[in-house]
Image 1: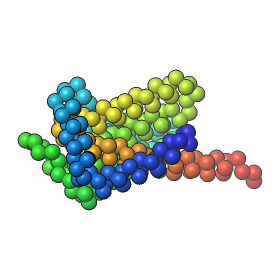
Image 2: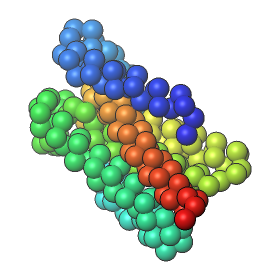
Image 3: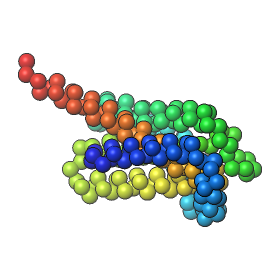
Image 4: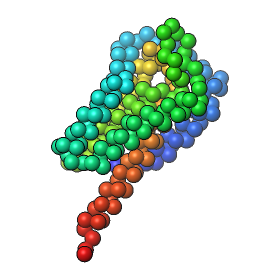
Length: 206
């Protein structure tokens, strides 16, 4: 990955920490209200919440693991998927239980906590994992760009769908994106470090 991706992860970590301590501030509450007024009721954007549903994410993760196991023979990549998707979901639930922010008040609302948005965070993690692993050995710049642009656009739409459905506040979604991206890059750092270690072992003289 390009070096600025890693620098961006540090920025998103700081942004998440800032939101963690400020989402109840008046400015943030006003932001949530204004964004909600723009998006709530938008059925086109709301449709994309299906892409971030747990059953969809779990199915997509299993398919990617099977592809990596039987076609790519990339067993470390299988761990990558488990770390990002399963590990990211676990981290999301831990933070939600710690923060315990109540969701927007609407009928038949989910009973889980709101901050950060799981759809935004885990949605980013599985979509970026797909883009990263499917472009890992690709030489076609057009193919790499297409996959990454698609992953970013879908990530944005999945996150915003939670505001459109009034399931989350805007700050929940932004915090989910920031936390998800930071966690994703941490897994990438581990993955690339392990790949370098294995490469050194294979070329090291007897």
